[in-house]
Length: 281
Image (cartoon, rainbow, N blue to C red; front, side, top):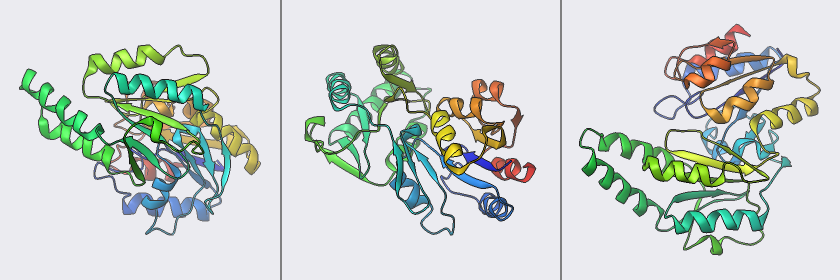
């Protein structure tokens, strides 16, 4: 194998949203042995850079679920934005339905001022109606969402600068019926791809943006055949790259759908599954 594509949340990052010493050392060893290790994530590139700030690792980054590719120096190599008119139509609907949302651009993640208040209301309603639901677990899920860097708060999508290219729109809700309604609203929209990366969200990108497509473009750029690539992930936004990679791995905490399409299942993200994958390569 000459290239290894690694998802971040739920895969490389453990349950504390940290990169373990074992995983970091395995990435370095892989690099020393000539394996190009890249990060493939739904996060924005600038957020990934923040995560790796205190590390010597400077990988290629497939960001925004494949809508962007940045080189190790931080230069934008490739991007596939959602058209502005289509993006504004999506955001108008999400605002009307009172969704918390995030809009990923090159420089910031735009999110509504009222968004976190909306999620607080959803949490209160869900716990009140279902006493068996853990408020602590809901708050943890929300805090992980808020832990990203680069947020810019806006009154409405209309305040997002016109020059800002929109790569990804993430909608988040603790209300399952509301979330399913959102999925059904956009699942057949021409020109869009819809994926989910966690239990409470769905994400929208241009139809030509996916981790799998981006992995193919990057492999071609680096002169590496896809059969010489490997990929590891845990969620449905990883499916496309696992299907095109020469070798596919799932961490032990991956969704069953991801395990079924993966050739090898490693330890969980708290058991250094990424290190196991890289060591096997």
